[in-house]
Image (cartoon, rainbow over the protein chains, first blue to last red):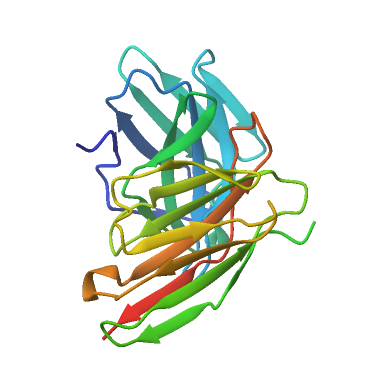
Length: 114
Length: 113
């Protein structure tokens, strides 16, 4: 049962343009969402998060949008830079008796070309 | 803040051997998590410690797996009688209590021949 889905395995964007990475979820108990970026041979690096009571959170070039009724969130990167090329994971947080368990999607590989 | 560290970064072993991995979390973090990531998948939760207490284990964690965090600081994950299906990246993460954000280490890549 895939609770978090990232249906696009890859995305190619030109430098300077907008990158939009999408994520859908099925578990309505998620109360927080996070995006992580992962380079090869490294662990995931935290990027940005959003609470389920918000619909938008912005941090520099990164903005995450949450549509609770559609159970959909997206990460916008503007402008995209070649250094943004990495695999991006969306994760939902299910708070379970005071312990936060991350449930990850399968990732989207972003390639930003100069 | 030196970040989460893991050792070794790579481990190649033969089927049937035992392996042990170490994780050193961010020093002030009292929560520690282990995840496993296989090719083409996102990380999957294995187990969680609050200080030295192991409070949650996934059904993915078979009897061959054991994890400890003896003094509430570093943690070890041991796999006994390794199988080829254990080949994966093993990731450790830590966080503060009540914080949603988990910080990951670089991972240990295990290859079972």
